[in-house]
Image (tube, rainbow, N blue to C red; front, side, top):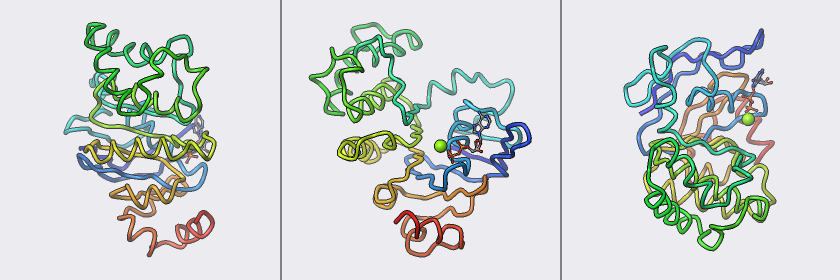
Length: 240
Ligand code: ADP
Ligand code: MG
């Protein structure tokens, strides 16, 4: 589904991604792991063109998104993204957070958008919060709303950038459980995470980035029990 070939990204003199090549298949759940500053977020942001690659190509469903003629907005509509810091619309209640883009961008009627939004809120366990404002929700609830909001656009692919890193420990699980359900439903997912247990259990594949280089691309079983590189071994010893 996603084909990344020889992807480079440079910020000024800082070469952050140094020739990454990998594929993500439809329905696959890929965890992206690596030390801070290794380029994980930049890699994810290149996939939906929040960052423009310096070199290399990315295609989604056979369509090159790095081609200058590609309609970026159209590409982005198919990709949901969830960030560490939720980024909900603070002035809109939960239901309106979910219906805003489907109405504005996709031209759905309010009635249809609200019906879908309520289904999604039920899935993430927040039916009773539809009239609440983000400031009155816990971190875990906010992140579940953020996931539901991304899903409201009916994406083919979901990108997560450390979705649980800003949460109090007791709220991590409720968010991971929502992501687990989503993975089971067949959604294609790329997840930057420090939750090694989750990566091991839920991911089909692990990408280990270090210094902008994809050092390992393996199944979780292989990666966690038998990492090939000294760098990954060292990293795992520190985090496990
Ligand atoms: P990670 O998510 O693995 O912690 P990032 O992709 O956020 O790593 O960052 C990798 C490197 O790129 C870091 O050195 C960071 O300072 C740099 N970087 C990231 N985004 C920008 C940006 N918008 N402008 C300049 N440098 C950036
Ligand atoms: Mg990051």
